[in-house]
Amino acid sequence: MNPYLITVTTVINLFLLNLCSAETVKEIKDIEFAKIKDHSLKLDLYLPEKAKESALVVWIHGGGWQKGSKNDCKVKWLTEHGYSVASISYRLSQIAKFPAQLHDCKGAIRWLRANSSKYGYKTNHIVVAGSSAGGHLAALIGTTSGNQRLEGDVGGNLNQRSSVSAIIDYYGATDFILRSKTQPSRANEIGSVVYNLLGGGADKKVELAKLASAAHHVTKDDPPLLIFHGDKDNTVLIDQSEAITKVYKSKGLSVQMNVLSGKKHGGADFYQGENRQRVLKFLDKVLRAKS
Image (cartoon, rainbow, N blue to C red):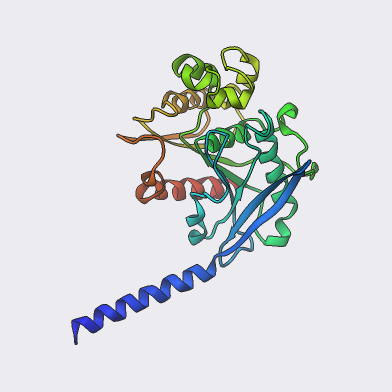
């Protein structure tokens, strides 16, 4: 047989396979889950071919709490493995100060639970994931269930829970008190990302800094935690992930910290290859244990 013909046939088959795969994922963009004055909070849904009874992963974008978008969803690939994915927005720090961002994320989770029958996914066990600022918020969601000061009422649906069954944190900050000491340029200085989030330096707004730090909320009933962090990260120092790992272990909780050697803040390696497999293994283990 002509080897050229084999090559052409292979290319055509791969194209058709990709075309079919693209059609099996249903994308529903810009669903409004809350409106605060004139500010609309929206989310995007990515549903697998068999959305009914699929597990739900909620993604929270990064950007230093002052930029970024739900369009930057790093875990859409999970739909290929039968998961539904919701990528949510939240008010940025130039619009509102903490805890507004956490209130928005919890409001999105309550909305997702209230509307699950419409879209087919199940919400008895939701997994929350995020990168950088989104990782910070994901860890807070998982460790502050039932904290009335941090629940808020964004979007209503107050009869629904905002709790989650597992957390995936990609290089997020978890301890602003520690960060005010080891990375003061990003936590204390005027105009720094944490200063803008809190409305003041973490060294001055100590109680608010603690309130915004997942490592200071961990209790014995908190959900399993999967962490990814680069050991050369100069944006969010690795001591942030080490801090919450230490607290989790002290409480006898399930935590897995994956250190990416030579990696900085983000990049494709965090979301490909063996790290994808780690996520899938974690999700399978957590959700199987909860079922």
